Length: 255
Ligand SMILES: [Zn+2]
Image 1: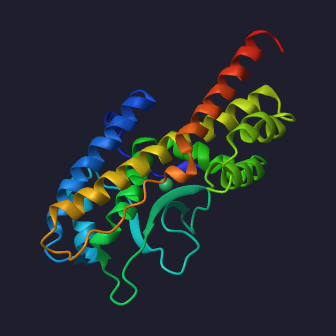
Image 2: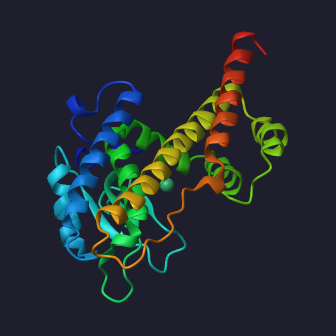
């Protein structure tokens, strides 16, 4: 079981309440951060130092994080939980990764969708330390196969676009060999990840467009901002939520 260092979560008085309340708090912090960071674009690129200064100004308490360029990595962006070398079972740092300019390491206004997407994930994590620990634990457990394989291949993947096959074949296949308790943990984790992913895309898309509108003076042309709809995340969220309901119903009926 992973421990969560106090350095990677907000104090309890700020992070208590229901999941939806905490999601709401993460959204408010994302909105506040956008207002700040948008104002920091005096030119079309800002330095990572300025970016960090703006994070610091909205964080309600001290949190350990560091920015890392996703350039050359196999991903557009991510928020990665890291353990310390001294204590491999304690999560003590977030790495917030998104693209930077390859020539000067600065952060471009054109990447607003990417960094706002990751900042939403980051704010979700700090308001949901238990959920974070659970996800980390799952990643280390025998669920890892399901978690990595199923989520990456079928859920967060544009190529899995046959939703009926997902609902009627792929998901039942994965659930088939699990006892009820595992089904619940697996589906709940999947549902939380999807809920947050849907909102992360919404934030990235909304603010990616907004920042270009605000700074028309700085940029010669407006660029397309991806809304992530090709992943069909909302539709997949419905399928996972329905599957979870069915598991609870079967459990009540003693199936
Ligand atoms: Zn995401």
